[in-house]
Image 1 (cartoon, each protein chain N blue to C red):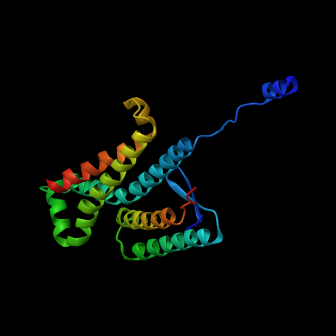
Image 2: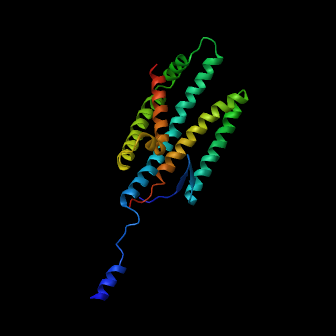
Image 3: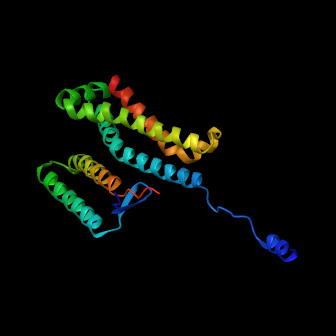
Length: 137
Length: 76
């Protein structure tokens, strides 16, 4: 019996070195970053077009960004609809869902802590809204 | 589906397999072809660069989409 007690004392508690929840959170953060990088590449196209049209409006007399954008949308109806309307809306939804998932998985942290891991997703959402606003002008 | 053709480093996808490298080289070769084509039709350096950067962004976006879809890891 004494021997048994010694054995019990020597036995350690079963430990799980890494919780499944931690893996889920790490996977979700990695997926959110993948989504934001993909969004960034596709969003760079309308952002580049806006920058080019802005430069054109600076150097061309009597031309504004809005008038240049209207010219472009009348010439390239479907592609401009894709780049300036459909893709930004899609990126807002995808990145918002990613942020929401991270927020709940990491136990509803404070804004500062959350921004540390999702700042790029937030940036993509801001740029997407900017593209939508410029397109709506 | 387990397709680890690419690995993401920052905002770039780096190939990890031969197919990935072939895709990257194909994209680069197409970018060079586009540059030569635009350069032969443009009237100035800025004209070439403005049009080439736009095409380069489209190539980069398509490449990143392929890399995004083919760098999925197995669900545990």
